[in-house]
Length: 567
Image (cartoon, rainbow, N blue to C red; front, side, top):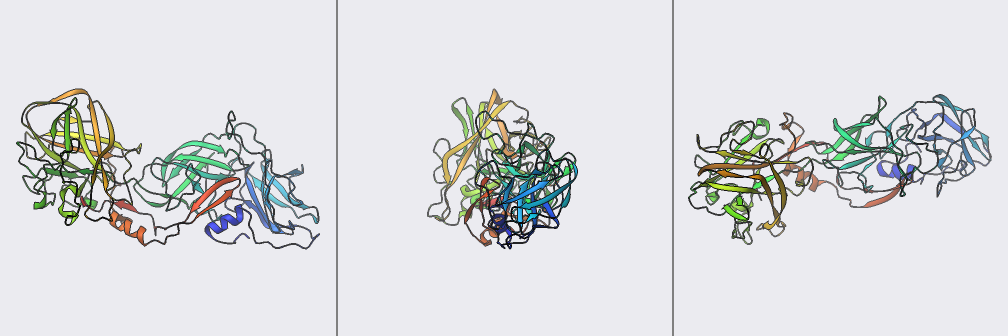
């Protein structure tokens, strides 16, 4: 039974008790296999008060049975588990001819404890001696080996898989065993409180966790409300630049859960700024690559992006003659409700067909369907766009525009709490390109140092592909309303907006042997075997669902495919 089935099949067998059944001869003496009492999460010989155990042996029950209601019985199918010299009985989750799943009492003594099985028909088994510690935290895994994919869910109790990964800042629920004492006075076999109004969950303090080696904030640790003997640890997924099966561990009282346990994680998608497509009087620069370009970029990740623009602004964008109508990044400046600069027409409806290629040629020849990657602290690169003010101009609001669906397989979530938006304005008094200070901080204006409020919303304008199979992509506005008006003198400026996900740039945000582009990532997903079947099951009284779909062949750092993406 211990090796019956694989993956989710085994989960159903062990938890739902749909086990292969070998009927004992009536009246035979029950026997515990040598070392057959194990932790139910990983089959090791580590135990803690209140934890769930599995006992393997022979001649236990005449038929497989499991309880239908709480409290859990201490004599199920004529089978009992006796603990220690006191003769205390363990509540039972499941019995069969060869396996028993039971819960240790919370008052079981620490140290060596004797375990014995008794049946109405066959009497008492041999004695198995186990050693109980104050805490022995274990994470349940889908195959019950104690390694591989964790029984980890979202808050809707849907198991995390490649088809349903955790995203940065999501709440991850880790289903645990043998964490020991909690607040209050839990009773073995009774459902833990917390499911009804006025009842308080039983908690554990001092619990820490890591996901992919990064500390994760623990938001709850304790007994799972409504179940018996099942613990849960809720953590907030930390920010990481990897996608795939990442390691997860929990530590309590100086004891850390088993190694080689993973959960499915998907990194935050990429932020792409949108180009402007409306001519502005007095502005002569355009989007063509070269010394008179209306676009420039700088990056600080030479491994990913190469030498062009490394730690220095460059106008060598690689854009060709089809971008001659591009006046820079899409930018709208307001003084109150009055637009005082607009090079795109998105807010006013004056954009024409710049972002619409219905019935047109190749999308790569349509500048309005081009995205410019801009995330200063995540594979760091930022684009800046030129704009010219013929007279002194007072502004109270800056509006840039971005595309959240640069790639549908790894979308950018504008509401993710790890995202920090940023806007900068540089002057053009000393050179053609913007003057860089303090790593992308503008020397005229920066939202890092100028008080104001960011907000985002959909504009109602879409990027429309010539390929009818590609759904229209919504253009979002990112707005920064200043706490106090800002007056810019007449002159030439450069503007950037980007999404940051760390307080400071990270040297580890570079490509490696485990890196791949968005295009490669999308190809892997499309090549993966598809099985959209969703299975419902009960995990020690907790209803959950499991959806199998594609599996990634490894854990990857997913990179933007290029500095400039054509859609």
